[in-house]
Image 1 (tube, rainbow, N blue to C red):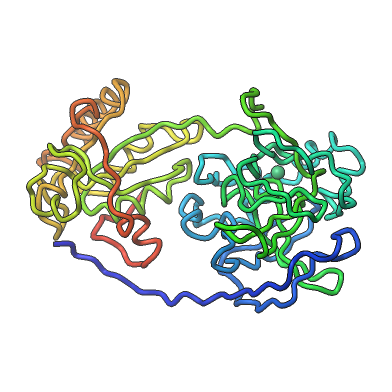
Image 2 (cartoon, rainbow, N blue to C red):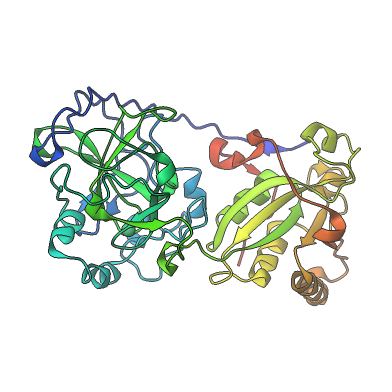
Length: 410
Ligand SMILES: [Zn+2]
């Protein structure tokens, strides 16, 4: 039985209502929104744009508009001790990753200035100074090729040809972004109306606006300046700036997976942590079956990380701080073999590092007279990882509270 302290937070309701179809050209101040019911300011920080103008996120946007990079679950990938407004201006900011494993850490002013030097004057006017290109003039409007549309300033993939549609407005239009974490949203009250401006989440470059009169399934219309985009043909080699980070995967079982997942999510360099089951003898285990002790699985967390920012040994050090490795088949008040301490190594190097790390720990004063009972097995031996049911994912991020884990003391 889990022993969980849960603090329920009351989420503020947000409702933004948008108006009629896109009737006027953006270049003359159109793209009208008939109404906007604003919401309380979100808890996350302001975002610095490429133009150096700081605008507050209006997020989270209406239920059908994906939120900016910082709210949950994307926020789990950001070091909560570093506000994004600080990160935007700090060269050594904690890394922020998108769900599709792109490094979307806000670029600092110096980097943006370097990137902006390559822009043609008209592109710079649109991207850096929130300009709008004339309707029916962009080169990408009628592009029907398969591929990706990336940020002209920083290279981040922003939209895919799969979501492009002909809106008849004269600007390239899409009904969803490439990754919801790649676009940020800012309330725009210019030209005597209220609109939702969209920017590149990494460099802050101006892209256009989003409206709620797009086709299903999203019902959204992302109205783009073609000048803010570059197209990469499907099958072409993607430039380095348009690729996701190279990742590695690790698996740790240390008691209640809610708490272990929550702790790993907050480690800078961790891209994603997922709660699940591993090390058992049956396929497709469920929470009920695992709790019934009939499957042999351990509550396990799959950690995808950026080895350029974080080593496997760093993760091992965190793991042994996040739980008590001397408790056999339990973790505090959580009793049962599903709460056992275990490491499932993804390759031979991880297997060697895990065993040597435990050997060195066993000699440390902290473990004097207390045996480390952590199982170390290869994934090839222990079997595949099965993600847990959706309601177990991001549990503490959604509901607050904490599991009975030792404090993360350095
Ligand atoms: Zn960008």
